[in-house]
Image (cartoon, rainbow, N blue to C red; front, side):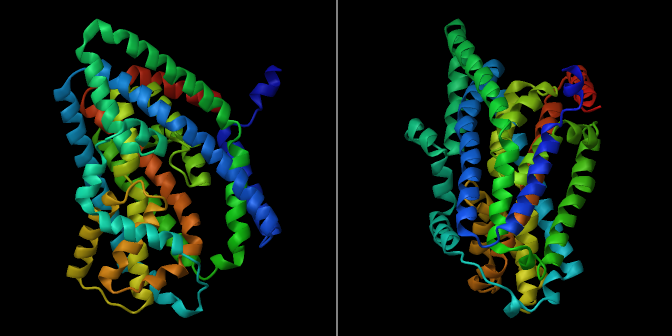
Length: 427
């Protein structure tokens, strides 16, 4: 039994095997509607299991963390630092995407009219409704008129807003609030245990999700847009290694240590193209890595709405790619305008299903690209989504450590002990 445990594959390897099998099944069952439906449903069942866990963990962990913090001034300071950090990193990501697009000109090497178009009607209706709401409606939407309705609809920001105030209120009543803290702490422990059980199904869910994607579009559809896909992934890798690595160094830790801890979560995010799939385990791991619970449970859920570095890179690069494909020359002023529009639009539409693609739909018209142009890259959107989701997860983990260190709410001893534990498990 002991030998079996020593040679047991880690979750990361199991997910990678599921990913490879999914590609094979997708190629084998190309355009087989029965197989596609089966794989889609199995994949959606896995995502549904994750979504079942996410909000109970956010509510319990955030309420307990804020109650233990108990200081509204510190919370205001943490919130301000977090949002400023998110804005800076997102702006750098958008600017990097534009820079790479200008240097490598991915749209100049294809004939847009020879590409296979994909139906994007589901995104168009979402983009129109999201565009009409505006930034004020988005801000108003953060305040929940009915907390239980927000909980039922899976609307993250109103849930976070309520949980922060509920945590502060719990702290304010002193000893009487202890029973609430103990109860919600127990709830979080139960949900983390449930998360571990659900994660055993992750390789099957990953296999089904990627299999359905490949079976629908076929491997041949990747060839014409292969350069764009490689460039997008290369830009994301550059952002992680250079910019995130530099931020980690400024705050006195190694990015590689963080990547070692969250490797399985990054692989899971990549395979499922779902940030929610990693949220429960990420909250647990960042707490074990040495960041205080209050900061972890505030920064990570907020980051899922406001800190989407991978999505920002993709949106700017894709917008420039389409402009080049249509032979539309963008001046420096137009590109700066595009950067500002993307900054605003991405915040206003965060949390919308297919948010990155919806942001593109709402943005490209400002630079003269016809909306029909997006039908040509819709087919490969999920493949690029895998990469940008992984970058988003790494970015949120980094933000948690950065804010923790800036608030002196990071334990070096706990961090090193957990890092050694992770390394021993993988040795």
